[in-house]
Image (tube, rainbow, N blue to C red; front, side):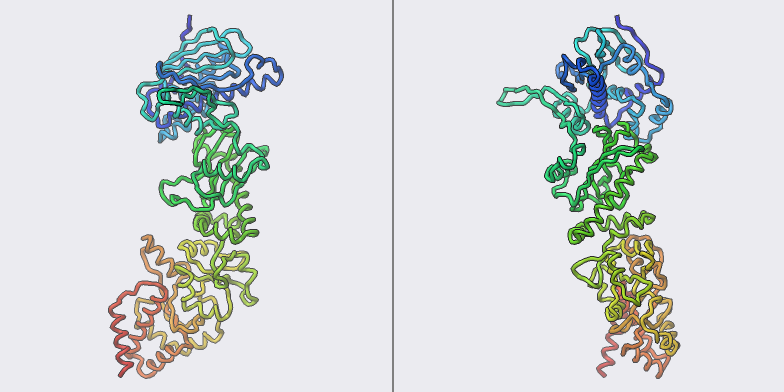
Length: 626
């Protein structure tokens, strides 16, 4: 006669959560059963190393799944170590781990269904997930060294029955009477659904997972075969010398949904005293079309002893390497480790550090040895690296040597900061020069570029919106400060101060004409052929930053502007002549406004009064023809 027992109080509470709540990830019950079966097979295999006769009559270690549509049951069984009567009571009637009350509290307080599911199994309660899909669960098990088997049965309502029974072979058989209320996409009596779940969660369990497979060979004629649903040998567990490039590429395309071969592959194992793990990482060659969409998920897949436990684990990658795909397999993680625990996990931090170092070393190697290919990669993912570094500027020293920039010295190739330093002129002691614009042509047309070209100074071209923001945060590279070519701190002509003193009254008058449009009017030594340019009064917020932030609606004020005049240009001499004849001349006011608007145009800024500018130009043309 079966003995009826009550579940331990905490177990009863857990079952109540399982049975009376609706979760969105019911599929994991099969993963939990397969993982338990795999553990049981590991134990019998270990025992057989000391006594090979244990496997004498049943040597093929395997997990079998059976579908019984007529009775609405799903069966999962193994020929592993099995359980005794006492072990069944201990393992299936109680939650025998410490911290159970805290665990249940976390379950109740979880803010989302996903969080609840991630917690299941953390304290050895994965088996109870079967009650999410079952009205009744029957377990038949026989320990390898006992004569009788044990039958355990429960509907999850608070009690279970247990009795000894006849069972021929060792191992455990779990029979699930499935709920009739399951959704259409939760049809666990469909062989394709079962195959899908095994492929997703348990594909690399090292024992074969077999099932009778029905296949129509002719109309109305069904052929039944014994099919192995899992591949068993994970690619990442093989030695690198055993894997061909084609196998690596096919695994990448099949598992990470890319048509292109990866840019690079990183496959390594770490066996430290603190943590052990294997990583298989892929650096893509092309940016996914969905990368910047809200639906795109970043991160690496996480496995524990070949069992899939989490997709897109963001904690394993820094932001600037968010495009990297791949997986990490570590025996040190439990099957259902939660994201909350991952964030506090020191082992994960060690893994992340190792992964980051490997990616950096790989990219540096490609940059040094195959720069042209690296430039192709950079054009795809440079923005991601720069944006990630901007968010994590404390990592500057690690990432700055991976950065590439366009340069005034080459139209065909980009340059690293290290290369820039190697080409600096002797009298260019303090600064790395840069200029900002929407593209190369726009920068080369900037008036300030004229003197730098003449002097032969190299200028970095910042053409991405993020570039100037990042450069300002970087501040310097190996002690050389980044400076915009418009900076007043850069001196090219040593006689400028004398010229400015001579023209002081004219500059004051032009500033009066422009009123609140500019903070100051001054002379510059950065112009050669152009008469005028406009710069920001504050290098911390440049004119280009103003444009970018306005587009993002994040700047409630305008950058203060300074009008700079070329003292060697014929236009400036005309201004001096007009001022000397009549300091309050209307003509001087018109010239001042035209030059101001011209400087805005050259900088790509909006002109405040286009009709007034057109009128002034017309008047100027009429005067010229009188």
